[in-house]
Image (cartoon, rainbow, N blue to C red; front, side, top):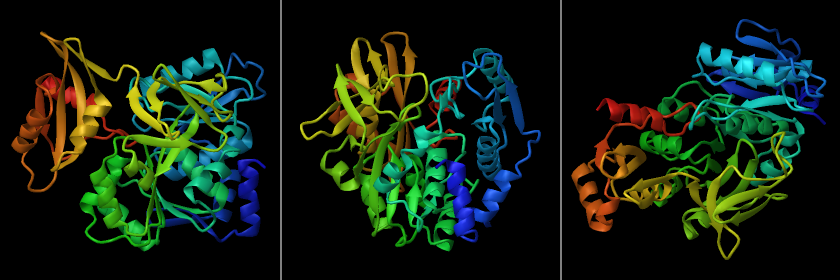
Length: 431
């Protein structure tokens, strides 16, 4: 059964069940399916005719440029229904880059059997197009929903653009299960808390950057939350303890995945606390191995054009109990006069210091050592930067001392909720 066929079945069986809540507007499964069938292209959609078809029966890619979450979702599903190959553009992409992307797609074409395209997050450069068959998501939904405890009774809160694969995969998987999605365009944590309470949300899907904002702004317990699902950014014991206090009835689930490969590993909060730094064990049907410190993943649920065993050049090792210990991406090192400093490990250490709420490490050029690094920190209330620096100098060798440590009120985030290190570098260079 395809995604559209599943939604049609829900329209027939439970047309009045709420599928989506965007701020205070609700959309039932019946309304959602009707909107998919009546989807009309407008000036936020751009058709790219393919000159290189490469054996696919479809020959038109639909670049979706709307910044409205509802429109992104409905147009993506509507394009699947009508036979286009949809791809949702990131909100931050300018006209010049979208023009360039359209020309690349038109010239290079898409791979055989492609149903839709996704874009990389662009955190390490310009976003790049990847191509997928619908079944590479669809056939994994039941597996991931079982791990994440998602079913027809689920009410999940998330915030972000449908253009990012973590968000779009989770949204469509919840619709596949017949659950309800609650979202907002607002970046204000107080607004998130209002929606969590009003609609009695029981799941939260967010990266640690947003979970820290939630913890900082929420002044009372969220007893309705049963599960928090988080991606594998820098996590720390203090955040885990704060979340447990805030949501006393919740189970924390950490996952590790990639746009190219879907979900790879997962673990519970307790498992993470027992072996800090792990990203868990493989999802069912997925196999992993570490070869010379590089992680290789074997799965059939991947993008088109790659082999069933593949690496995105992430690094790590597998411990004696079969848990994957993640150590960062290849090249995520600072070479300070020949001394190698791991950025993820340094961020993990800094995040563990008392008084530190959020942290980011960025590498900089240095005339003497070649490379060095600076640190941006968001302090907890009543914490002093001088004491943080003093602790670093007491606990780390001098070669690992940052060149500078800056206290700021909030780390800048990209649209996919990751720390915007390019912005931090701009701030540093402007000095």
